[in-house]
View 1 (tube, rainbow, N blue to C red):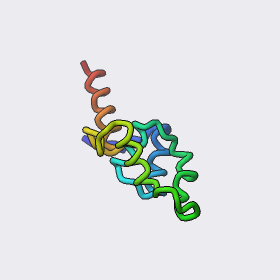
View 2 (spheres, rainbow, N blue to C red):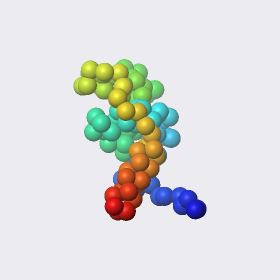
View 3 (cartoon, rainbow, N blue to C red):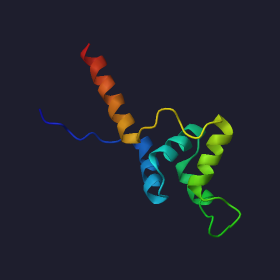
View 4 (tube, rainbow, N blue to C red):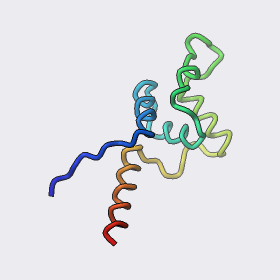
Amino acid sequence: MTKQKQSIPQKLLPWLEARKKYRLTHVQVQMARELGMNPKKFGSLANHRQEPWKLPLPEFIEQCYQKRFGKSQPDDTRSLEERFATQTSQKTVLKET
């Protein structure tokens, strides 16, 4: 059996790009997604060098998550790629049955 590389959906690509560009961890990306943040707007949030009163983006995401949900990180911490892989495997199992 050959394993084909599955392409990532278009709606997740901005999150992958933001993770690389702003050096976020998988957990911080998941936090931002649960908070409903827009990855295209991270540039205005991540200018803590120009505006010293702002927190760096990773700390800002963690602080917002703590304030809203009352916990330091999500219960299920997986990367976007792992989440997509499990979703596609579940879909294939459902198609087979």
